[in-house]
Length: 404
Image (cartoon, rainbow, N blue to C red):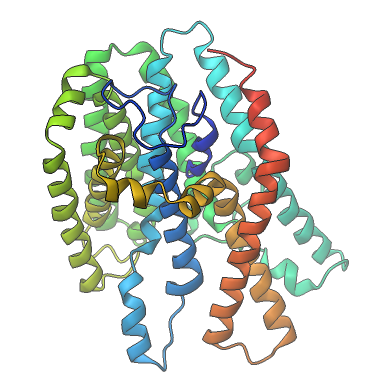
């Protein structure tokens, strides 16, 4: 859940960080000021994704009671949706604040490249080399089979793997499954800078609203007409653009003095919106709709996107001590800072640990899967922390030599 890639936007925010959450919020938001509460939200987003893939994803067919309890977390996959909203808000804000810059396109795309591509290509290269080594007898053939699939390797280089996933109706190559959301974000950010630069500010808001309204309509059409439309609606960029678009819409509104003051004066309304939409999320959870089923014709994505949008608004406007204590929690903000690396690496390490456990133990039960998954997550967070400190962070600093 970036930036999804979305988690990678952590380093795209210019300026220093303030350790306090109550950072001069009486003026409209701009990208020169870091809001630690958003790091905490990013930490929550990646935590949801980790819980989904390590705890709530696999089923215990012979334990109906345990399955029922695990059903409480069936929407933890929506951590990616929170990433989308955060990404739209933060990246959209950077673009809005610098739309008149003579270096607008050059600086934006160079900074994105420095932030996203190095670690991403390391992971793709590792999977490709492991796959080829298995086919040449240098590693176990079963390891190569684990990375096999109908999706071409070049699609991961061009960020078009989600299009191929939609075509084949599945994720394919293990370890790289989560990169569909990165593809969505990169495709979205091929067009957003053009809109921000060339569409007049008064018209831009209508274009963004059109994107937000169009995405659920497209999802419903795909689900109704295509055999695996439920899956296509999950992985195709136009179908998920409402979450990203809502983030951009919020970025526009909090930069207008009138709407910013309105948000500050009606914080209780925003909290009420969080509660109402949260009840909708709870209702969807306990109805037990399966992911990709299309039972709600994609309406669940709309509810989740609106819910997470209201949460983001709370994070940037609310000065309540409880809100700050939760979102500025040290553990969450630290996890949020390494969220991109964790997101990109966690599924790879989950699969690797599961592969090793299966290789060493013929009796591979759901309990073994859970234990291996949790171990893989722990290793991924550790590696992501090291990667951030010694690999990604220096590249981010170098990227900021390019000024808007």
